[in-house]
Length: 79
Image (tube, rainbow, N blue to C red):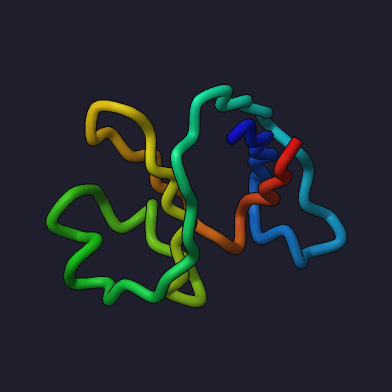
């Protein structure tokens, strides 16, 4: 599956947010959005990477790899 991820500098719902990056995945196997408690995310990153709504977009890639984004800071499109 081919996906395009647009990343914003703040919550995408904020009218003043700006796109800061765009990533394409050409070989994504699957993706999901799920709620993950802050305590679980803090095991892998710092407080600045927490999603305000505790929702994360996880893209599953070949070889068991994943890419995880704060869901309220990205738009994901299947292309």
